Amino acid sequence: MSRRCELTGKGPMVGNNVSHANNRTKRRFLPNLNDVSLMSDTLGRTFKLRISASALRTVDHRGGLDAFLAKAKDEELSANALSIKKAIAKAQAPA
Image (cartoon, rainbow, N blue to C red):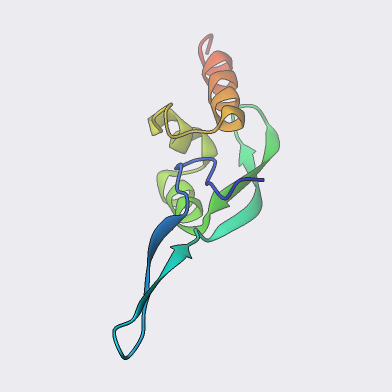
């Protein structure tokens, strides 16, 4: 399981631990990932996703999973999230 957000594409970053004596050692900054179930209003079902805490706040702010995926760039989404986005678009097309 990769340490990457399925909705925003956030992944680990690298940097340095800096001691009081200014010694530097490499370290990794990991994203705050959570396993969540998000409900799609259009499809009427839930989807399990591994997303960052900031992405979860953004989903709530935009008004749900459907609204978030409508604005999201395809390059940032995982394969799972991209398939959900296409299914939502397909369900909304005839309406």
